[in-house]
Length: 66
Image (tube, rainbow, N blue to C red; front, side, top):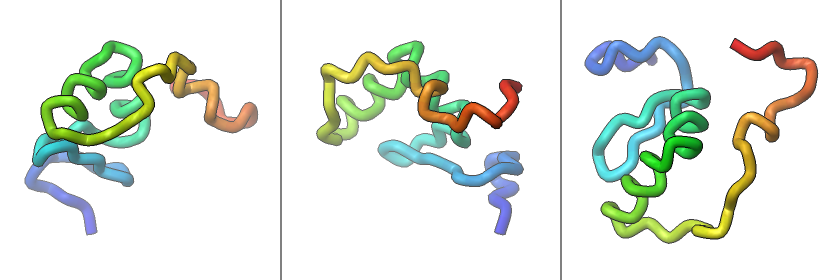
């Protein structure tokens, strides 16, 4: 089922602390900009604060960039 309340047409739909972060690429962008870490901190979510990898590097090589 697509959540039309937030006008998001892709899955997954990631929420942190009740706030929509977005789908996969939006989460990757939020991580790269530091917004995801702020949301996680404010929500009391534990995560590896030393992680510095480019999340797009985890995608398979055959996947074309958008």
